[in-house]
Image 1 (tube, rainbow, N blue to C red):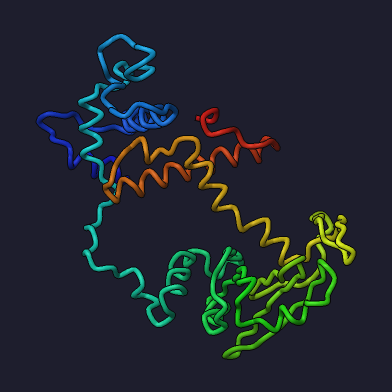
Image 2 (tube, one colour):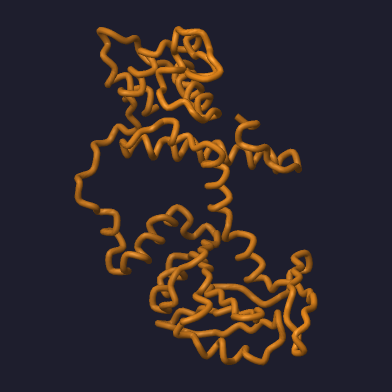
Length: 298
């Protein structure tokens, strides 16, 4: 409803025909196909009229799917919004300016999740209790890893100094009438600390872990235990963004093939890559199997 009409508005009607949805899919298909191959620095090689050579040019030709001039016309005319572009000044933080830049960014990014019962998981956030007090007020649960060392919560490290490996304790604090928890677990050389708005220390029966630890006599042995619920959830969720990024960008990133520095195009390639990664992961889950590698899925 937006991309096709706005792109057509930018196409020169005297030289180019109107873009259709089916042709737009062919256009995207050409980009996806080019993203399956490395080493073609000049995009025009994909439309070369010279015979395919093992040492130069592209491994295939796309002329039968879309002429190069038409591909470039669409590329130059692409438009992804029917709203005027915002002014140069950054107004991203204005809505939550009183919360500070870090909290403002998190609130802006999670706004669609407010009051939905979802939990926002972060690999690193802030040790400032005051910044946490805003989350329950918007009906949002938050969970984040805290610094292991050098934190102002040094007394937690001291408390756990003589505790056995895997021992867990939850500390509770109230700031500005808002309750939050610090779920802590003893590791071999540090204490894992998860600051959260929720959670109990019930052991997760299907999340075992084993660790190689040093004994008092200098030998080493294996110990096993079950993660408590806050640590288990965090460990399973904190890499989801990294895993999605890995599927997006490896072995070849669509954005690299596109080769654009125009911000709207960069965001569009990001959305395409995320959609592709989500589709591959969803298909794997639906079939109860591991998601296909990126190139095979394409």
